[in-house]
Picture 1 (tube, rainbow, N blue to C red):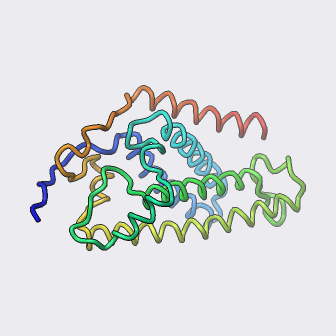
Picture 2: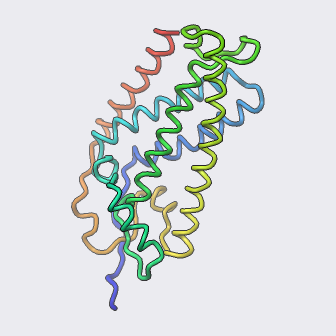
Length: 224
């Protein structure tokens, strides 16, 4: 079987790549600040994570073709079909998130939203260090939000572990460098595989990011 020659083609736009790596850095910083009692920095990091998540939701509907949820979220049949051929060789190469990867993206976004959202209402055991919206809840509910906040982090760790395992699998078994694609924005694909992609202008991303940041500020200051 003669395979088509793979050529680097533009796949991921700058907003997607910056959001991806910024979320990784902020989650690591949030973990460090929380573990070391730097709760002021922990809160600001959480606000930044929430703003990026809101932007990513916006970009999932208004952004480039490869960033839109409608472009990579598939139904159960497509996921099952892809899973059956996961170890096939030669393996098909997806232009963008594959059907399984698309759902992993949604899972990561959902858990991060749950974690940042619960952090806004969380109350510590002595009630001294609390989220900006904690006064909207009774103490017991605030404590429950704090416990849920910690639970979400455990779930996030599991999802990140699966994500890293998938990256290693694709690099070793399927010879796909997903990290390089998310860094440089280009991926080695069969000729014409990315021809149908359309890329949104950067001003549209700037507008969405500004709106997400203003919304977080309004939530924290307006309701806090």
